[in-house]
Image 1 (tube, one colour):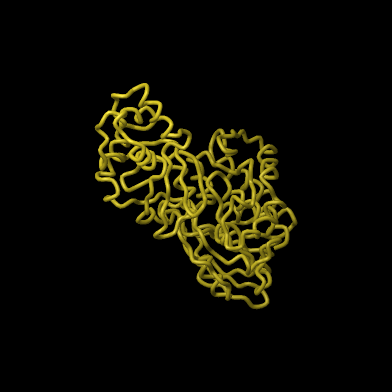
Image 2 (tube, rainbow, N blue to C red):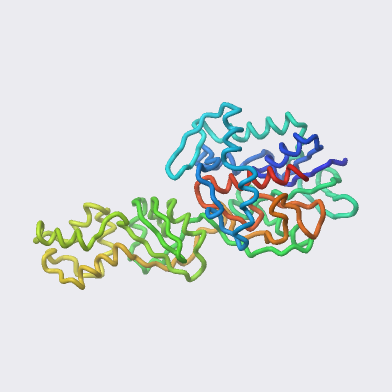
Length: 390
């Protein structure tokens, strides 16, 4: 069975590529080993699908080739996808930092993409495992459901994150088969683990949430931080995890909007007999303050602290330094950092330079977005650009 294009992967980028190519009159087949399409879309945003962001810039993406994403993001922007949303009467809402979510649920996005695919003649081969692929005049794909050939082959298989829904290294293995360079992968947008010796009985803080700023390798984010049994999570930790590597330290400011030294100076005048832990607990959970200060003498009245002691307390709160022991790994990571070296592809149409007719799109590439709809926007943009030419 011959098709103009075969797309491997029925996720966000694969579906966008398929419907775009279908509109050109191309005969398109999508192959996926899963029994349904768009599993990661359905999980996105807690089931509400954070489908894009109002403020998408190349700076919101991490890659060894930081300019690679610019072309695709400009050719199919967040506003182009919003036009599709509006045309299909999907009601959405804006949350903080420009994040856009469905008012109802993520299934609306999958239905939109599927309807466009069906309308334009796209065929699906689901629950289908690929045995091997080879390139002769055409691409030959041997599968558990038959053998297929195609003029163009698009790989949209995603990364290693969330293996429970079938994530695998298929795309990376295929890239290597065709001689492409692959950047080492690590989990991204993931919770971090902390050595239990950092804070005795660290798990007692589990469930505490607060706004904080976190810095790692000269990158700083400010958002909600959540204490877990194993370490730290929450949006601010997921964001900074994209910039963290083993042995790097992270610096946490638990009170980014308050100058604690100035506050303590004022307290020494207004509340001279109060304990510092009780005063700081006006702004931070008391249990957390006790853990942070328990290795110091925090039982004295506030007016008995000298300048150096005040600076030390402020440092513990504003510059809490941790060296994570690791992350929660791919099972909890939202994305995969690293991937196929973008220098191997055209930034305009995503065709590989070495193999004519072979394309890679979406998360399988060495392009990782921030938390907040950026990774789905990358899927839409890269899928669209490949679908225009494949």
